[in-house]
Length: 255
Figure 1 (cartoon, rainbow, N blue to C red):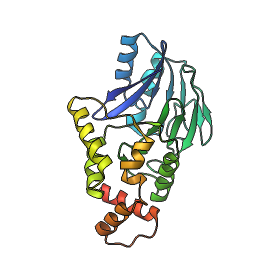
Figure 2: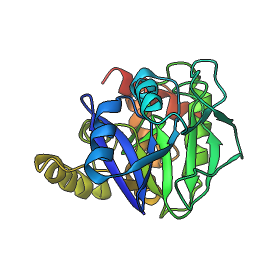
Figure 3: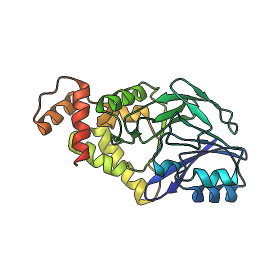
């Protein structure tokens, strides 16, 4: 199986999973680059996976459905995505017709209330806008508690899990991670690599859960270096990892 990122808008990735002449796409905010790939490669679109309702992840649905009226559209239980044909929740299994793999569905609210992720031990994690490389999504509809719990759920996945997220935000996230934890050597090394990747117009994704556990401040709110830094920045005494996470998210919102 081949997993390709197709760029859309300024910094979105539409992930395309290709097996033989079949293709499954994740979060197609724009149909045109997907149709271009399908035409160039002679592929048939069989299924679409949707993580949440934001327009930049769903606006390509109608046009793709016009071109492929028989496709399955797997997505969250949500009244905001009318095109979903197979609504899914926590613990459900998703078997796209075009793939030999099956995904487990994880509910990860916070960025939006309807947010889900698709996880396969052999392929990886498609997590939309919840977990980013060295970052996490803004909390638009949920609460800091929900986002904290969602990220901790993802952090418990195997460390070799590939992380396919929805945006190329890595360099900006690394700048913030440097402010929070300037002496993290793993982050310093990754930052050098990521800058080289982007200079060559290559993606920094996918990352891995193990890498995020070493360098992502949103997954490390219990680390002493981060607790100290966040307390100093916020001027508060923080007694739990969830409180530290909440202050990190507030810091990033205004960074």
